Length: 143
Length: 435
Image 1 (cartoon, rainbow over the protein chains, first blue to last red):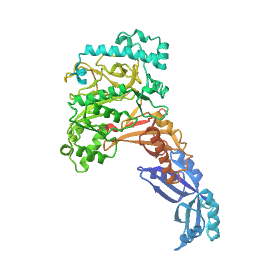
Image 2 (cartoon, rainbow over the protein chains, first blue to last red):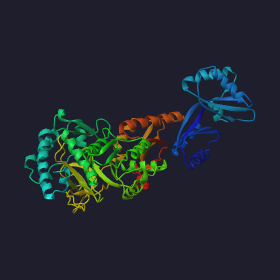
Image 3 (cartoon, rainbow over the protein chains, first blue to last red):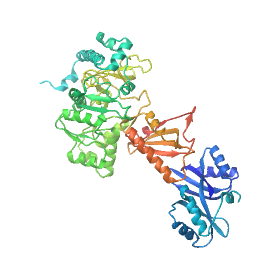
Image 4 (cartoon, one colour):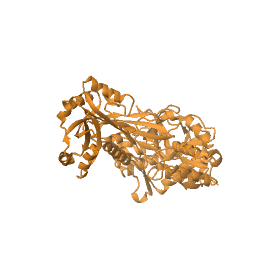
């Protein structure tokens, strides 16, 4: 399990740039950023180091930011890896609320999955059983 | 034969005699039958039996909307419930609404008052009246209905909504009189044009009796151009009756008060002093022959003036000018009265949003659009779009229940709602820009 940085942004000009500038000035390094958008607002989900620091900095700068627990799974960078991971979860009743992927280095990709807190243990068990490596939040924080 | 219209040209001194009789009767009726007035007059040392002139009435304490609310539901009824034929309520959550009661006689004078709008337009049995004010507790629909019936019109009780059907009926029934809010009339006109119907050719409208919300002279001119008819402004409020307290004649130069049923004073809203004709101030109304819920010196919070002099139409009833705003923070949204405090009460029940909110009023296709902006709180788990959408839906439905008006809720980032001296500007009214 790792900590994702979640930011509520109004869908207006310059807000995303302002968010990234604030993080940059605080020395926060991002590994992934994805946006779920509606016509009025967007939810920006970020994997970065120093999440706790990032939340404090953003709140101080007037953003609405929070930490969200998500699962991060290391998968080989080859066709079918994500499918295998999801199939492993498919044998459980676990429902994925959202997910996204990013490349960590040349060999592995990281799949981020948001699972309901009550299903997290079952998901972790199924993922580990299928031979995938779950990342701990330290793995990201230190990288 | 004597016609009900005859009273509209009665010499003003004779009207004043009727008014004085009505005032004397009403203050005593209130004192003897309504506990609120009994206590109010005893405490203020006001003797209802000693009223002999308009100046004497000016010594009576005022009645406010809050007084009506405090005595919800039947505290202001001056007759037994068995004599009450109908009730109407101003908008508001249950418990803070104000209730108007009507006996058979009250319904008849209401019809008489609204019918004047049709008489002013030289209308009557040859007219087809299309009413698309909302029918229900809102006084607009049934008030207009009683008036159109009393004027002898063929009356079509459309109620509000389903604009395309309104347009079909307007065209197919050959309606000549349109009763609705001015913004809805404009919406009908624009929708008809968009449907390829030319209201000038395809409709047969002569007159629109439009009220329940303020509209500018430009807006009136545009409506008259599009629908090829004359627009008459109508004024009223549930607390004294409903629409028909005052209506414009074809001169379109002020609204003739129904002075045989209401006594009007204009006061300085700060000092409460009665102002002379011509000066702007708050309209205060006393009912003269209302049976179920008479009121004495009711503060309407509406700002207007008595237009000095006689109207070119020859009718003697004095005119009030078109409204110039209000002395309180009440909003009129699509004809419905909304107080920001009602919105506040709803917002307090949602810990997910901060107490900072702002209401933005705009006009889209001439209809009021209300957007409520609320700042997301840090302890709300906003990580998922579905959670945010659910929250918006929940707030919207609770607002709709409380206010009877649809409000779009938009969640915003913290501190985006402007504050001045720590207090948020609650209401941004941009509706004038569409007019």
